Image 1 (cartoon, rainbow, N blue to C red):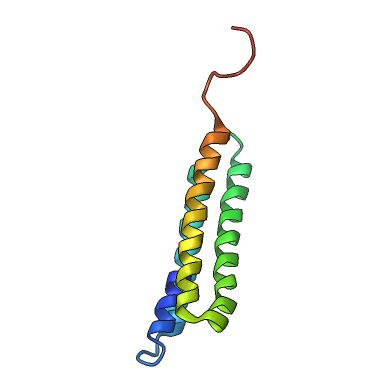
Image 2: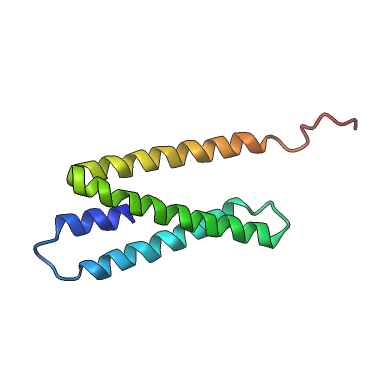
Amino acid sequence: MTVSQIVVALNQDRYDVNGYILAAGLFTSLGVAGMCGWYRSYQLENIWQRGVIAVLGGVGAILIGFLAAPIDKFFGVVGMSVWLLLNLVLGILATQWAIQGRGDEGSGTGTA
């Protein structure tokens, strides 16, 4: 969603399709976040929990996009670019943290 906001900010004077670009960014971010949440929770047997995780991913994507609006107002395109890079780095770190938290299969402390 932040990428679409950057595109709109850079092309604000040239084109009159800014609403369509923002809507496309919104729906794309919802779809990508929902699919990532669904994919990352594939080990859960309860489909309800997987769905909740997917919806929370979509809500998180919308919140990240909404937080980019004041950043655009105060810092412009440079601030939104830094926001985008910060979110990418935090997303990579969160994924690594989730993988480490999952642990190895069969590494429990129970007796064999």
